Image (tube, rainbow, N blue to C red; front, top):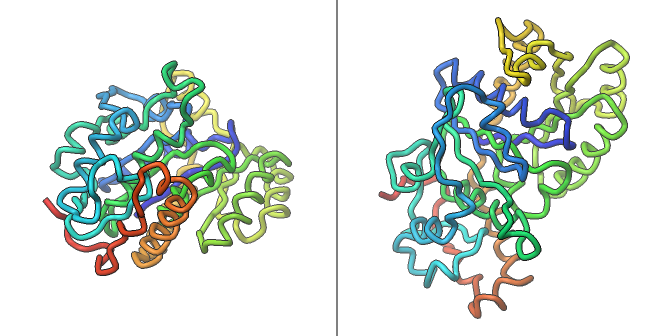
Length: 313
């Protein structure tokens, strides 16, 4: 199951991405965390010894070449864009699989398998946007065949910027982290309005709640989309200062259990995932990609491809 964490900058989405990933890993569940935020802090938030891996965004041409496999509809890696959907002959992936892509790009932090998009560095200034790097994550998820009981947790870019690509349609459930402030819930309204157009399921997590008035504020502005909340946490503050001690507070541990129950109760809809993938691919093809590649990229869509099929070696 694929989960995204989104929210206003500073809302705590990276912290909650890390907490939820560690919560799953400690239960014995197979989990992969992906840092898809321009501020690459998920490894630090996960804590512990870090085994770095090659960033996905810096190796996009090689990733394209590997994933296209023998798909005859993709003439070259150069004609493959971030939205190119898999088809017959494409290489499909299993989470944490024994394959070339995971061997290169899978690291570990705080006991959690981790993949990173990579930082926005000096060579990108003035010539690229961060979504060019996020294209690697979009392609990865588009070629991933994951099942029940397997978790992929992605820390996304802040605010409504996540809607600048079709990546927001790649998830089974999107958790929006909101502080009990007007700014905190304004991002929720933006996300809700965009998500409704595509049938994207969102659930709001209140964060940094200090009193009953905070909780009432969230309930007033978020309504039934409020799934649960985390209270202001001395444990989290200590962990952020490198002083992790003891256990997370009972209420906040319970909130993590609620998140997992929400994910597990939402079955995968492969047809919806693939339909969105095709829709956004055709949008990108018409808007810019056909002109840039000199090809009709609508031809990359394989009408006989069955989403969620067996993995290709």
